[in-house]
Image (cartoon, rainbow, N blue to C red; front, side):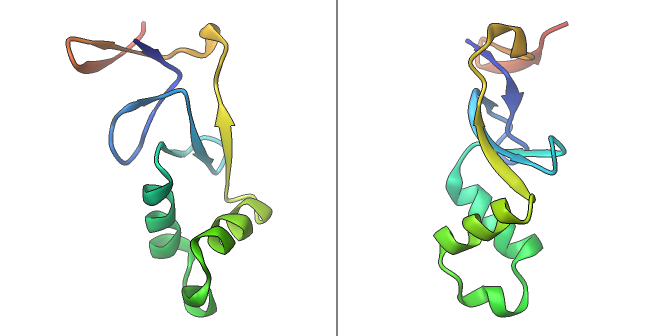
Length: 88
């Protein structure tokens, strides 16, 4: 299987997910996205926000966005024998 990006949290390949700060960090799963938003970005009054509100505000503030990579030219990784390898 080929993947466009590698999740910065799990190390898994991903063809859809959250892109942080225009590609400095990637999250495959929403639970990891929320966890890191609350830890790194959600201080103070945001502690009472719902997960959906936290995501909405992060997107509005250009912290992150959701995308899907469908074009094979975007593939940067391939899983071989259970290991994610960067395509040369």
